Image (tube, rainbow, N blue to C red; front, top):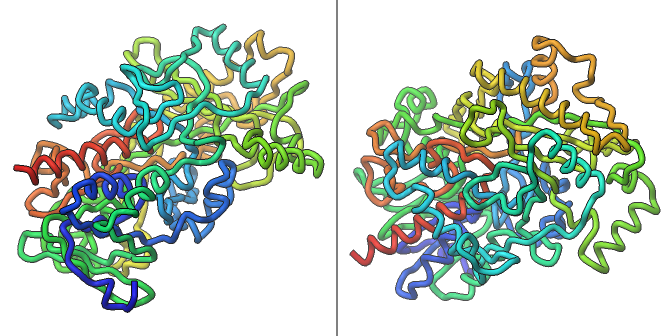
Amino acid sequence: MSGPTSLDGTYDYVIVGAGTAGCVLAKRLTEDPSVKVLLLEAGGSDNYHWVHIPVGYLFCIGNPRTDWMMKTASEPGLNGRSLVYPRGKVLGGCTSVNGMIYMRGQAADYDHWRQLGNVGWSWDDVLPYFLKSEDHHAGKSGLHGGGGEWKVSKQRLKWEILEAVQKGAREFGVEPRADFNDGSNEGSGFFEVNQNGGVRWNTAKGFLRPALKRPNLRLITHAETRSILLEGKRAAGVTFTVKGQERTARAEREVLLAAGAINSPKILELSGIGNGAVLSQHGIEVKHERAGVGENLQDHLQIRTVYKVKNAKTLNTMANSLFGKASIALQYGLMRSGPMSMAPSQFGMFTKSDPSLETPDLEYHVQPLSTDKLGDPLHPFPAITVSVCNLRPESVGASHIQSGDSGQQPDIKLNYLSAEKDKLIALKSVRQAREIMTAKALQAYQPEEILPGPQVDSDEDLLKKVGDIATTIFHPVGTCRMGPDEQSVVDPQLKVRGLDGLRVIDASIMPKIVSGNTASPVVMIAEKAADMIRMEQRG
């Protein structure tokens, strides 16, 4: 980029956000050499060592180099607490800072999307797109892809205590499972991760780097998108700032908004697209009324239970001595293995809060470590964390701008535990975790509950304690809901209703949250969107 004017120009497609979805879109759309694409990213490069070392997520969250540094509004269901709400502000987006778990969700999730009227989004429709980009460690099969851009690996370390939890869960009917991604995820197993040789694998490495070699792709980092340019009812481009200077880029064909479930609705609202009452309140001219923008916000709330253990190796004890820290660093330096290669959660379980349910509605993330809260120092004693979340919460929130200033974060209201059913499932999930920890297979480790604590037992006390300890696992979705109805923000082709030349392609389009982690479903959404765009162009 020679001078400031070189940032201006006309492109076929302008993609806003080089995150989970944006990197995929850039790769796929530039496969056609006649197509010119501009990719805008508000953050900087992912050439930061902590992005690539798996345990480095601890140093990326809450770091302005890689994180938008957002917070939620005060949550009544969490006893008035506001939560830190990490969002990736870096190439690769949230795949540069997340827990690296490869998870698709359940076939029933996507079949439900189709039942809601979203033609082309059933499990059978989306599975080919999961397979398309996958490079699975076991190679190509009917349920997994081989040779794609999205690497899926086995974890490179084992923990005896986690294997004991698996045996213990089996005593209560939770059977081991070889594959969480075959459409059903019921059972227990060790998570597969987006890593390559013990190093984090993000969408920047998998999709963007190869695409940047093409002359028809231009990437601009530190480019914060201010608004979408509308000419009548057509999106004609975007305005953005680079180093404080405002720039314009025009899109001959389409603007593709891939800024994520919090920032995509924000950019729409700042552009005059949204609920007229919200926009008028902040002095923004209503250019296109779309009341659903920013609504339908869903997320997974995780309840962290902590158990002190004996006779077991955990990260707490390993990392709390200089010798331990040195040996961990050496192991990673020489072998790319050991604790520094580990995802935040190694072992998982999918269970039912009620036996009558057709599919699991609880997900456990079990970790050989414990802290008071994410980012705090590890406890000085050996312990494990048994976290459990409700996969299909009924509590729904919203995310809306707080002013016309694009530099101000939105007002993020999750309304956690506002639905009565979610409160009931929260109680059941903690009690189920407690039950599993009484298993014979765990007796040798003498597990002792320290969070919430055995004295917290009545429904009332337990629900109050849940409000104190529950936290997000950062899976916001739904704020630009896809649907066949006029109230939806985008149609099943992901086009913003009532406008030409504008699509939203990220987690915000999910009508209902998936029953698992959200990164790989977003890769799938981008793959499918790219296909729809190309097919349409071919006519």
